[in-house]
Amino acid sequence: MHTLPTLRATTAPDEKGGDYYGPHGFQEMRGYPVRVGTTDAAKNAEDAARLWRVSEELTGVR
Image 1 (cartoon, rainbow, N blue to C red):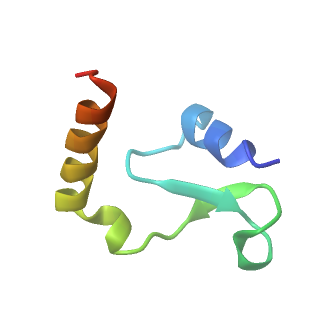
Image 2 (image 1 turned 90 degrees about the horizontal axis):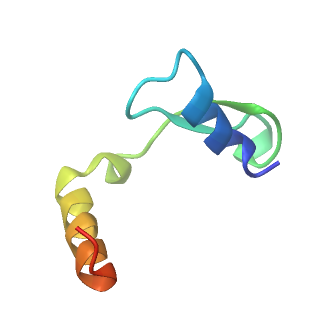
Image 3 (image 1 turned 180 degrees about the vertical axis):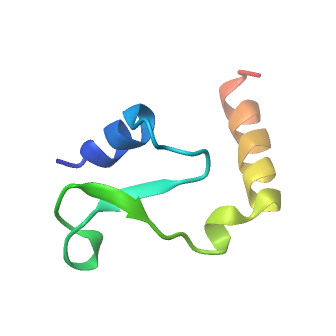
């Protein structure tokens, strides 16, 4: 059931860029996927750019 949030995010007709999906159960541990909240850290553009840059360096893929 861990793949359901990913499938929902990539196939849902109402999905918007930047949305996050997770299980709808207690502490988002179980249940069918629903749109869930995010943290400020998840929206940090500087961290995202650094992660992308390091990923390119480590994989050699641009």
